[in-house]
Image (cartoon, rainbow, N blue to C red; front, side):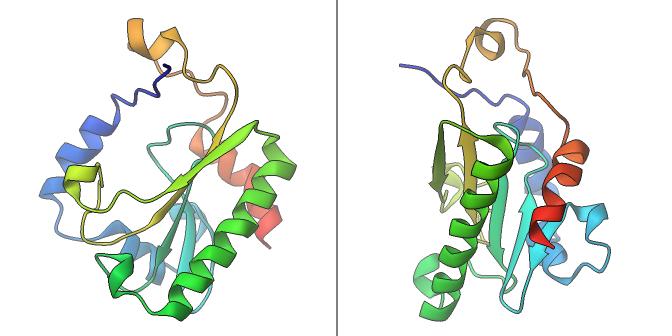
Length: 159
C-alpha cells in the first residue's frame, strides 16, 4: 500500500484552528483573484488552488456560502459544484496529463477537514509513483512546480 504523506498540513491545521476568518468565504468575495489563486468563480461557487497541495494541480471547489455540510446545501449548489468538478478534471487532464484523480470531501475535523465548518471538494491529480519514499523517509515533499506556477499554468483554461 502506498500513502500520500502531507506533513506540511500540520502547520496549516494548527494555524487554521486559531484563525477566526474562513479563507473559503474570503475567497468567495475576493476582488484580486490572482492574489488568492482563484481560478474561477460564479454566483454560487469558487474554484481555487490549494495552498498546501498533496500534488501539483490540487484544486478546491467551495460554495461561496458558509455551509458546513453538503447535507445542508441546495440541489442547485451541489449540481453546480459537480459541473465545476467535471470542468476541473477535464482541464487538468488537458494540462497535466495525470494517470488518475482523487475527488472527494473531508467533512468534519475527525475526517481531516482543515476547514471543518465550510465544506468543499478536493480534486487531486495523481500519477503512478507519486507516493514515493521521499516524504516518508526524507521528510521532503517533491513538487514539480510551486503554487504560483500552477496558477499561471491553469488560469488561462478558466478564462
